[in-house]
Length: 281
Image (cartoon, rainbow, N blue to C red; front, side, top):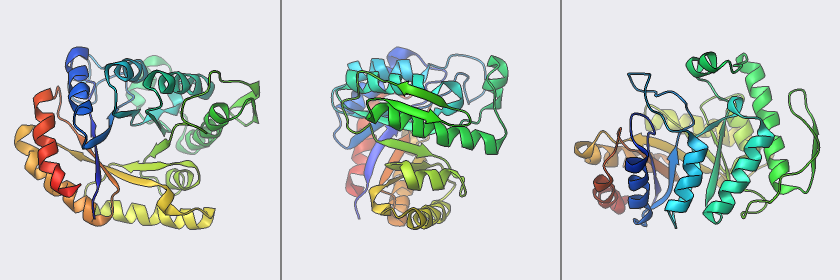
């Protein structure tokens, strides 16, 4: 069974020019349907200090630098921005891209960043309560003329988000995470894509089965949700190994495999990677 492909770049310990050139190279390769970054303010690779480009300003700039490829953040930490602010950012980025935005959302987790910036990182249960309200608020703002929400954490009164995104009723929502009770339940109700980073295809398949069970409870066809997974590419010499792992995830039923490029990836590796993956597509 064929599988679709995307790339993900690490905006840490690199320059804007190098990262932009990788996305432009991927834009020229039809195999890759989308490109992704992450939403962090500190590097996740040692040293944990140093450059790390901000996700959403980067997406807006990359929307101008590319023409075909879809683009998204995997995934936006809900704790970092008020949902109404994020909805306006998403609408604007979708307009700049001509309707190519994938709206990635997650509850947030990075204690190092939140502690440094004085951003509250609530306990897990509250964090997911806030996440559920935030997703509902964003969907309302992007799809309705006005939105009123009297949540415990998010309160909107006849709130507007104008102009609306190009994609209607809203850009596709990707919910990322492995939490079987809360994350996968929310994905089953609201997401157009679910993404997970897993150690092996068997673990991913087990998580997908939980998603399917939540879909049954919610009365939703799981075929409506793109099920994606990340595969890390360990430099040019690791392309074959990464392609073999992508084949294993394809056999497990993944719809989309997102190839995580190495640190400060060279644009020249995009085409050889595509050549190795083409037989699977």
